[in-house]
Image (cartoon, rainbow, N blue to C red):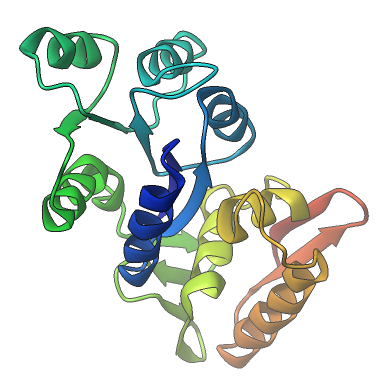
Length: 224
């Protein structure tokens, strides 16, 4: 899962983000409210952790502006404030949860899991296109000729393609969603993974293929 973490205390941000990464989260870190809004507008996040006391725009303001523009990303507010009125204000602004500093990392991780749980419980645990299915729990890709297990980023790319098979997914969309908004990975990494997925589809004798529209993006098509 990909998270945005907005915290102006840089030493705390480094420590918390390192623990989140060790717990298999992809994390983008920013240190002010305006940067948080910019990242949220251009990125695609499974959840956001917002410190309330930030420069340029506080956590409440970031949250209000997110919800005003229709961004429903789950939000956990972090603050040194413990007054009940502040908690109510945060929840009324559209926060999903509220945690007071100082906090225990085990509790933060538990609250993140609870906040994002609805995203991981998909009504369709298996995606299908043509005679190919993708198991979203086991990461197994199955076709007429057998099955293969996908690695994390392979699965994420295939899931993006299979959720709307005929929709073009741009290289930039793959990069932002999977590698992160400020990743230093080169754009050609997407082509490398597409090439690997094509080989895996061929290996299971899939009746679908990943097509490319030059300069636009990738999509799935059933073989004729």
